[in-house]
Length: 365
Ligand SMILES: C[S@@+](CC[C@H](N)C(=O)[O-])C[C@H]1O[C@@H](n2cnc3c(N)ncnc32)[C@H](O)[C@@H]1O
Image (cartoon, rainbow, N blue to C red):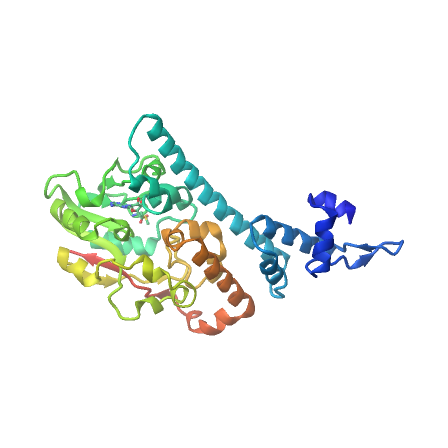
């Protein structure tokens, strides 16, 4: 016991306590008849101590390590995810604190918005670093968007991010307010202007088409941004999300069964009909292929295990917006249901589908 305590960096008293409460019991015997830790006990102790270090309470840990459906690899994956999540959050907060310290050192006034910024707004400066892990062009969605651009040559891409859906064969100008996202645009990408959709620094009708992909829900004033797109371009193409249909939260099992908080994230988001009206657009459904290459929130509808991966979650803002409690609860519950076969039972109808309509819509005006 003393040797194990030394290796693990805990006191023998702690090990005795875990033994007494039945959390980790040394189940082997030494030649001299003393109780000793068998290899399985050491694995369990390692899990207990790692969860402890992450701040879990002993009762919660007992539940976690007592789960018969989770083997050592499952625990390691879970621990890894929890640690990466912490690291991402810590990185984002350190960056925000550095920004504020620099501002204060220069004698600049720090507004309440800036102080609270590290907790939500300017989110893409915070999550931008994790974005490129899974976010890239999905060729089938790109084909639908590029088709909608028609014969346009001068293209404005608003909320461009790293430029996943910018057509290579046209003359593109990008607009992106987040410095972190601008910094991650690949070498040779279209020129990018630091600006926001709500106030585009261009003359009326400067472009053949203005496009916006998976970004409108991030804008402070989506309607103002759409009107700006309409003002600066002849044609407007927007990939967005339909919250008009009653029960839209139930379209996707992830929001229906695990993350109902998604609805709060989109509360106040304009209706699809309202957005279409604002720019005079027709509405086309955009199915998500089962093997979608772009790690959108909906991308893994037929690959549920992906949502257990922290790097997958960190590349979409929804998970950061719902907050760590909802996120951890959803992930734990999905993990349980995947282990017990409940997810498969509930979603057996998805196995044969090649693409799903999960509410993505293309507005074409
Ligand atoms: C999910 S990313 C999409 C990026 C890219 N369009 C794509 O499909 O890969 C959303 C982007 O919207 C940007 N964004 C946030 N607020 C914005 C605003 N008010 N105007 C324009 N872009 C904004 C974010 O910085 C982020 O890069």
